[in-house]
Length: 262
Image (cartoon, rainbow, N blue to C red; front, side):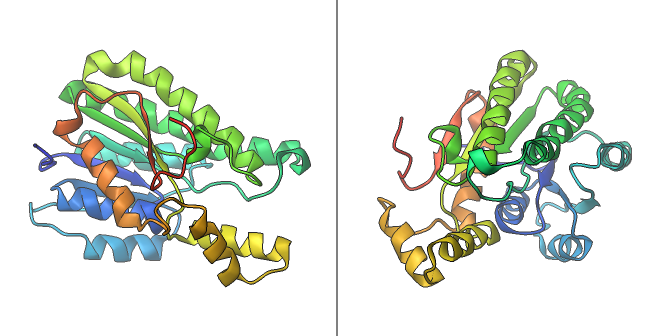
């Protein structure tokens, strides 16, 4: 099985922590030259210093906010001009704040949409020429299992993730003939800062301890534990590789079997 990404450049969003950082590590281990994208320059710089360079890679980072489209576009254009085409893109952006859909303001939906789809479209249109030139493209969107079954108390997130999933499915059919695949990976409950934030919010709403909430959430999982970020990144690494060339347009849950649908 060919998982080798040596000679390929990979852009990883949300790479300063959590799932994004784990994906950056995995792709670097497979030989890719990683460009880490996030807002926290200190964390990005630390990540780049630590990533493996066994294939002689020169990793780098872009400090940008996915909602600031002009800055995002300028920084990514400079990266492409300096280093050449990017053939792997892990599209990962933090999720909206929790809360019921019926209590969310219209502006919360607008803000969440602006942080996800427009920025993704900007990046897509900048990366596509290079992917087509190379005849190799892997677009991997980090979404949520809410794409399959909406999650209680994540009203805005459920809505935006569904929009992103349909955007990706549409692209998968449009771009496949160019050697570009588009897939969505759906994390379940994974030990990240996002999960800690959700458990904290759930505990505050219920007037209970975070420890109680954590135990309760684990009991809801068939596998009886949370995932580690590295386990999620393994799936991303496979989809980014040559071995996954005929896998296109799918929603892949990495959730220990928790999603109650096929």
